Length: 466
Image 1 (cartoon, one colour):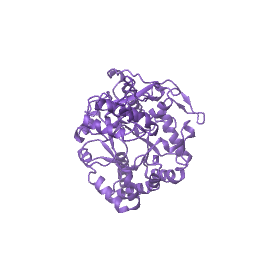
Image 2 (cartoon, one colour):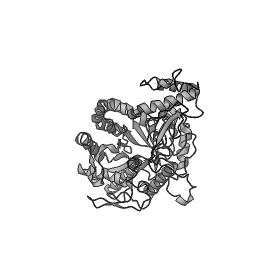
Image 3 (cartoon, one colour):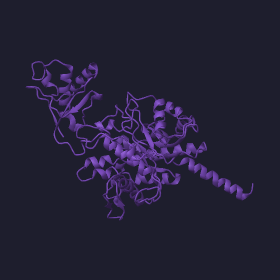
Image 4 (cartoon, helix red, strand yellow):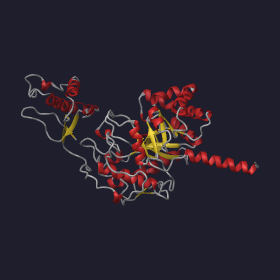
């Protein structure tokens, strides 16, 4: 073989490896497991294939799922849990073992293409959380060393971060990382991503800034369907949607630290299809509109990119495959899915971007695009298990602060003697007394919110004003 032939062969091999490591150009889906009523892994993978998902992102390295993905054309992202980061950062043997158990056992039959170290690590600001911050990049380095030792060059290593890594984000040209992480964490992280040609993975949800300020931010602007144009006074760049603003604020923040070319990947984005009373704009209509328009934007040819980086492909994962009923927090936390837990579609969506919007069936109208102002109560959900309801009642009443004083014998809410009645009062009272401390109206799915006052006669249920 001549020197030129060897050079051509090497170039071809390099391009082949680079191409194999790059995203497929198709939209990915986040596959979470925080539900006690979800379909099997096999059914879930069949759903992903039927959707024509280009990739799937897991929140661990689930052995069953990874085995079942073998032989498919779905590219896979796996995750190192936050609690394993310090051990991996301080012990190369542990990193080697992690790669052996979670990558080598499935690769290359399963197309693992990304290892994400931790999940939104820099959003945890407790003393223990901050300990992990300083071990994040060392853990990523050790995972990369393990991959190279096995001559695996088509797997990227990164970490997904939330938008709260920014100190300022608007206008985009003012984008700056938080001072507590800028020098100590972000600079080493960006150096690693730059040297390994990996991506800056970001969880970007336009729903959150819009829902916090729905009066001043146009909903259509957040849903990619506005004629509004916003000109950044610092850069002169023109924006037509909220997601581009969010992404470019990261571009400017990286540039300020001297990193001009690290590519973005959207590790999570989406819109909630339902939520609590008072969670403005969480609806099937808005969720379908956002995700459909996201797919259209990300799969358009020629590539669109963002105003700061036009014409670049941005890999994106929609959150999430299912509504997950064991997620904690407010109602929207459990309603980001493309599918119901029984596997049926919450709304139609074509992840290839080839389906015209006119080809979709009509969506249910949305009625909560403006903030709700009024009272709300928390009552027992219909058709729940009474034994579980009684346990939840006991919990609510055990929290003190007079939560269930009105339910004691002879008091105004003691009768009727019904678990449902007593639980409904206890739930409303608990929520009203402890909502300011983070309490919500859920009780593991045993409670729902209502705007209809359940009070009877002298028994007045405590309410929450939203």
